[in-house]
Image 1 (cartoon, rainbow, N blue to C red):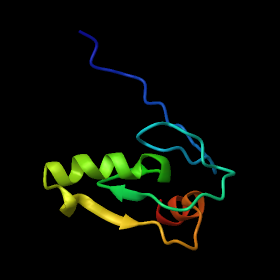
Image 2 (image 1 turned 120 degrees about the vertical axis):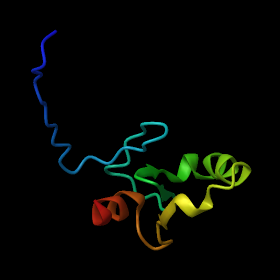
Image 3 (image 1 turned 60 degrees about the vertical axis):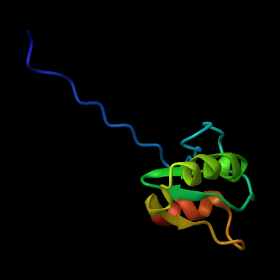
Length: 80
């Protein structure tokens, strides 16, 4: 068994993708969404994702919400 492995580091640059659906929000002005643990949940996924969070009483894992006057893209960039 080989104990060595190659480490690959990816620099996403300014790209912002939803950690749930993968939609690219890099150039979109859409606001909304939240940070669940370390996952950025976009405005499109937020409502359905929140239903599961509430069902399992996991609200304590929400680390922040995107302000209404800030795009999801800019908010994610500001917290990473």
